[in-house]
Length: 116
Image (cartoon, rainbow, N blue to C red; front, side, top):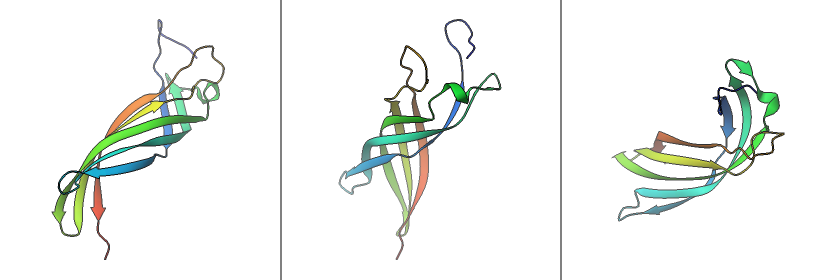
């Protein structure tokens, strides 16, 4: 893998599958905290348009956590806003003397439908 000075920038795409527990709180239980583990599978990896996937581990494991709020729109529909964080706990580079871990965050908006 190349580099520019002491660092480099690579674009890594993972399929992450969070396995989180939720704790709902507040007077109407509209807030939630969540935490758990997130296995991730490397889909693609590029540095300066060069494929570097062969140098990286195909699997990563991370600890995920976040906070969210559910905004009721109607009796059968709510919007969910949340912020999620991911801290990698496994080395992402196959053959390296140093551990390199991923970290990231996302802001999400989703819909909650009540099925009757």
